[in-house]
Image (cartoon, rainbow, N blue to C red):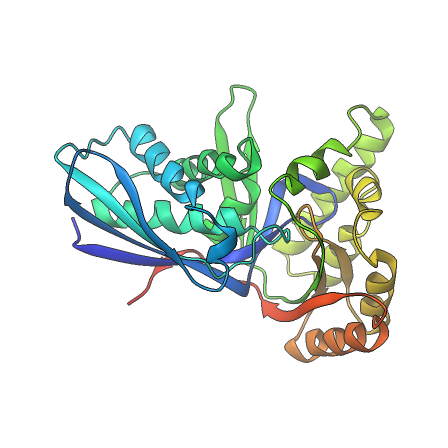
Length: 314
């Protein structure tokens, strides 16, 4: 058992076109950090402080606290006579489709796993973090937390018995994150789910499944060109959401003209992600977007590379 542990978890972009609610990639654009320590107490999980550039939008970081409570429950671990105290650095902007609540939940469960020497599989960490994220999203979502916990391109799937399975693929890629300035409230994610179709033709769903399978296979063999092409082949989720993304077509065209391999909405938006092979190409995409999208109110453009797993830092 450790005196205190500090863990960093990176931002992420979910869905990537046809991978709705099952796929996300971790990137170094932003990160959250959680410090966890064990103190004498009454078996509670307590958030001592939330600080950092985006602390104002994180409230009391309920996702992190609840994620730790879920981890203790799933691991059947009692902290009777003690409390776990969390200090949370919020470096991932909330409400932008970049996995903000997922990053803090991921960092929290990883920190407590190390703190208590918990011998649990990755699937338990992801399940606990996903359930904690329900405090922000309204229901568990495992894609963003899986990416922030495992790094790389993460895949999360529930089997017919409701058991969660997770894995990740190392992907050597660069990306440009385009973040429009948009009104983002606490109900943004819920609204962007409400605009989605509830029913669809079987052949349309089957086409999407095939594209998702090809995207994952391309990632596994390092074929970024096919990966990027499949990111733009979703015909279920992206068409429904794109009309709510500021300057969607303008940004997408500017990024593709500059050499992006694929461009899609990051999570529920409003951010967009453009995939490239190198840092130089990602910078070229960033320059193109800034020069050609002056009519768009872009808050920030970030160049990042694929991030590794959540891990302890000094």
